[in-house]
Image 1 (cartoon, one colour):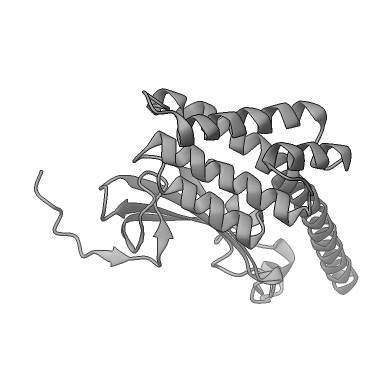
Image 2: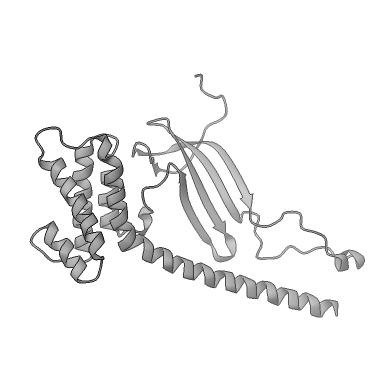
Length: 246
């Protein structure tokens, strides 16, 4: 297929969710869904008295959801990324909509995130190496949570005894640890691409319970407070307009 003649735009460095390549990607399409109506209904009072409509100071045209379709230069696969921006609170949130993210890695502590990202880069290359590096991710989790023990098995048990993870999740972690051992020591067939989804699910379950879920709960509380503040702001503006018209 011949390449498009459309001028190529390049975004910042990002990690491709398909191949794990960390490099600039080409922006092949963009779309902005605005938060505020750019053409609101006219105010009858303002029209009657010839008062020019005033745009709310807190309404910024850039507020809303920005979408980018990105093409990886390494594997030629596309990524769909969503950026949410709200100028009033200088809030920016970036999410990858496609390919589905294995986990929201920005919630992870630095060392855990580095270990997990290192594992993800090998996912499409070798299942045994992927399992081995996911095991190192578990080691990083135990170090971060200050779990003591002579080996990974004992450290995971210690996390359970401290109440960091429930007993059923310890079994999940042990399943990941066992697959790690197969990948590291099996001299015959070892792991294959068939085990990839299981490795993904096991690692995701552990990391989401320990790091992602608590951060999401906190983020939801903060977002609720922001919405309450915005509601009070709008209510105050309405009261002032009503008083002015009276």
